[in-house]
Amino acid sequence: MKDPRIIVALDFSSAEQALLLAKKLDPMLCRVKIGKELFTAAGPMIVEKLMSKGFEVFLDLKFHDIPNTVANACRVAADSGVWMINVHALGGKRMLVAARDALPLGGTKLIAVTLLTSIGSDDLESIGLNNEPGNVVQKLAWLAYSCGLDGVVCSALEAAQLRQTMGADFCLVTPGIRPVDALTDDQNRIATPQMAIQNGADYLVIGRPISQAADPLLMLQHLNKEIEAQLTTD
Ligand code: C5P
Image (cartoon, rainbow, N blue to C red; front, side, top):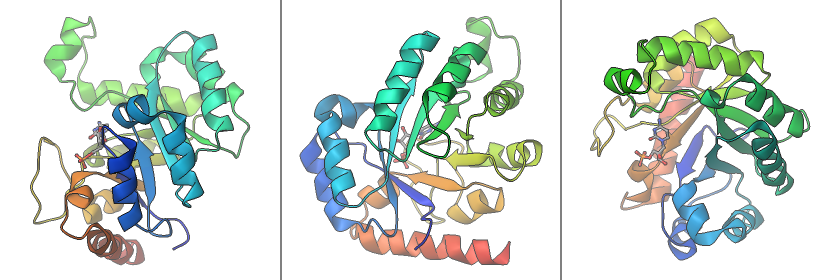
């Protein structure tokens, strides 16, 4: 598969658990995401190990700090050879531009988190942002775009509008994906893989539906088929 659309979230507290799942997957059929939990437990070693097994890695550390600190962290992350990294768009224009300038163009993809999907209107008000979450997402996505970032993380439900405003080349990465007949776990605003692709998502972050499947590889193949079917009808 040329450009696998699924990014499997390795949400584990040890390298052993992550490697056990990775062993059941195929780097030709997916990429993997290392988040704060796994990286805090296992460090750069797990990034190297997964890359040595052929997996392209999305290092999901959501940097958010002063521009100089974020730029340096992005540089170190990109030097490790990972496929994708991210920062918080709420860090503002100078931070986003510093992160962009720290990375060679055409190398590691740099995307931004707009608003966390866990943030609602009440949360926004309590931090002094008197606006609707949807408007804030649009504003932050536009900021990321205008600072030259490669894309944003967004819910599949936000993807359609962002695809329209941001154009075809802006990368949309969507978590909160559930197969039609799956448990929702703690996710609220979920979409099926077909819906996400139909709405313009490029990459789908999928954790538990794959990691907790009886046969993770079979589930991955099944989800890839759903995605392929949608891509060919678009
Ligand atoms: O297991 P599940 O498919 O729900 O995992 C989704 C992954 O995407 C987790 O790693 C979670 O932290 C991440 N994520 C999310 N919602 C966001 C951003 C990231 O679920 N808005």
